[in-house]
Length: 375
Ligand code: XIL
Image 1: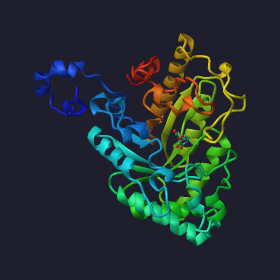
Image 2: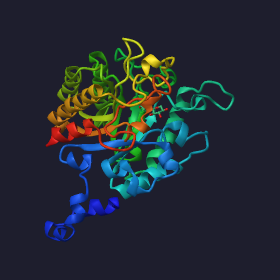
Image 3: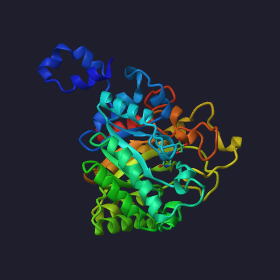
C-alpha cells in the first residue's frame, strides 16, 4: 500500500478510520511510529537509492523511519567535488524523498578529515593552504551547503570525529592549518547559514570515558564562546562483543549531567568476530585481511547469535528509553542487512547482520525485541 496513505490514515479521526479499517488493520506499525512519543528513529540512505530512487511504496526506509541521513551523499567529496563545483543531485533527491516520506533530514557532515578531497587543503599550485584561506573555503562550503537547505535540514553533524581515542583533538589537516578554533568557526558558520537547524558534534567510541570527556569539554568550550551545540552525536558502531551497556550508560549520563542532549546517529551491531582483541570504533581507513575464520555466517545467522543480537538491541533501546527525555533521535546506519557498510568494514566482503531488518527486508528477532521494549 502507498506509504502516504498509511501515514495519512494514521492522522484521520477514528470514525473515519472505521470505513477503512480493513486497510488500516493490515498496515504494519513502523518502528518510528512505535517510538514517536520518545524519539525519532532514523536510517541512513545509500547513494544508490538517491541516484536511482526506488518506488516509495517498496522502500523499507520510507515505510519504517522518520529521519534520513545521507550515508555518503552530503560528504564533501560528493557534494563539493571540485573547488568551483558543487553536486547537489543526490542531496536534493534526499530532501525530496524525505518530504514524500514525511521524514526529517539530518545533514552529514560539514567538517571531517575523511571523504574530503585533498584539494580542500591546497592552493591551485598544490601547496598547503594558509589559515585564512582554509577558513574562507570552509565558510564558503558551509554557507553554500547549509544555505541551500535552510529550513529543510532538521540538524547538521557540523563536525565529525575531531577527537582521538584519548579525547584530545586529532591532528587533522583542519587543526594543523587553522588551529584548535576550527570547530568554533564551523559552528559559527553553520548557525549563521541556518539559525533554525540543530547543530551536533558527532563521534565514535564515545562509550569510552576519556573520549566522552573530551567531547563534553569540546561542547562546553564551544558554548563558552557563544556557539550553539544542540546535541552530541554518539555514532554507535557496536558489536556483540563491546561495549557493555553500563559503559554506554555512564557516557550517556555524563553527557546529560553536563546539560547536553544526545543523538544516537549511526547505530549498528556487528555479529562477526573481531579482527583483533583491541578492535573497536569506526575508523574508516582501518582494514584487515579477509579470512574465512572472520566470516563464519555466510549462509545465515545461527539462532544463538540471532538471539544475542536481539538481546543487545533490547538492552540498547531500554537505555535509550530510560533517557528518552534527553535522547532526541536514534538513527540506524542503514535499513536492511544487505545495505550495511559493516559487510565491508573493517574486512571487505563479509556477511554481517548488524541491523533490525534482514536481507529480504523482513523484521528480525531484534526488531521484535525492540518492539516489545516500547510496549
Ligand atoms: C561510512 C559509509 O557507511 C561507507 O559507505 C563509506 O564508504 C565510509 O563511511 N562514521 C561516519 C560515517 O561518520 O560517515 C561512516 O560512513 C561510518 C563511520
